[in-house]
Length: 327
Length: 230
Image 1: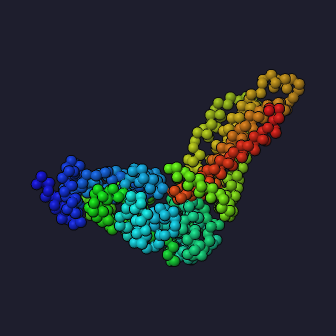
Image 2: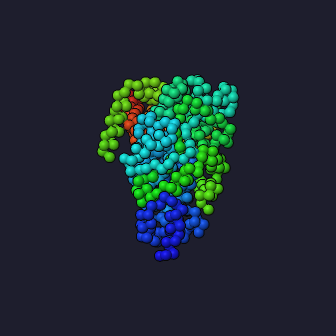
Image 3: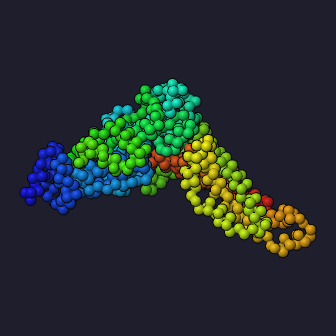
């Protein structure tokens, strides 16, 4: 009893936010806590709140079907696991529609999301998202509330849709900003672009540019779009700003000079149940991870997974170690 | 759940009743036309490959097992995989997005029913009928044209009908590699989650209606061409 209380108090002191009530409930969690603490090293116990994790549901992290989502799921998952939480990874094999269906069915209770895109998905593309992350997350929070979900703090890392051209096209046509685009250019992007407020309709309203006649529906910043731009089938591709291919091919991301593109900051979304059970310690850890990540680092992690074909879990671990988030 | 179904259906009806959804480069009319166009091209190519080969092999009474097995393999390979596998080559060799990768997959699924039916049709000509035809002095070519092909016609047209319906319905998959057709409603609707469901339903219903119309039209053609058969 006394032996277990000492590291508990130390941990509580370190993680200033842990409320006293959480300590009381810890006593009932002896077996899970001991098992989790045994799985991690003594050093981890010192730096994180290992040992103070109350009994609760397994944190099932749902990753969408693209590399970055898998990397982010691994980053949050491994850090939580090292801190003593029971974690399982669920590859959803699909996109946002499956994420929220999986929350509803209880298959997952945590996912790395993107603030503006998640908001627009949940509000039926009402066009509420802006380029302001705080305002966008606040609106997202209200959408999540009725679904029993909650958004953690957004990361400074932004993975937004971006308009990308090859270096040759950029040079030949003198393209630097989105406002330099002309209506004769062929655009390729996700199939829902004609209905997406920050895609074709946004180009028309914000940039007075109508590319709808020259739009080819492809995938959401995936291999089809990359192949189409690489093969010269389209002039402008909608890719994600953190896509490792962009750096690899030396492509040019056009500057969104009129602020069309919404604040797609990384924002973890979890179930209210998770937050209620695990309390502030969980939120503090998740927010700390989010705060440590930036766009450049995420692009590099994507390049390592997408181009160098390293495994997402290994790349996530090396980043966590470099940031001192796990030992 | 029931509410979701009702919303999806009423949303789909609203979608269909909105005139703007029918016109323009991404309207229902343009996409239906695209779906028909790729189906026509694929049908012509499949027929040109399948029917002459099948008729010739059956006429010569060649042992068909290997060729039938090979052709039927085309039915077993998922069209989805064919499209995705061919896509990068199509771009590399300048055939572009969408149309040609989809076309190849459609030809591969269009050939088997036409080949098998044309073969069975010609091969089913009774032996004594062929011998009688030769007996009255018909040349080999005349036997094929005046005896075997008419006998084969009903089965052959059935093969064409099956192929056409399959191709029209499968052309939907072109949407995944950038061929803007009725399938694009499904791909696009899927990306938009709950709000996109009516669009998915619209795509599915339109494809089904188109495939059924093709079936109905070819059924009429079949009756017209083989009046003795009804």
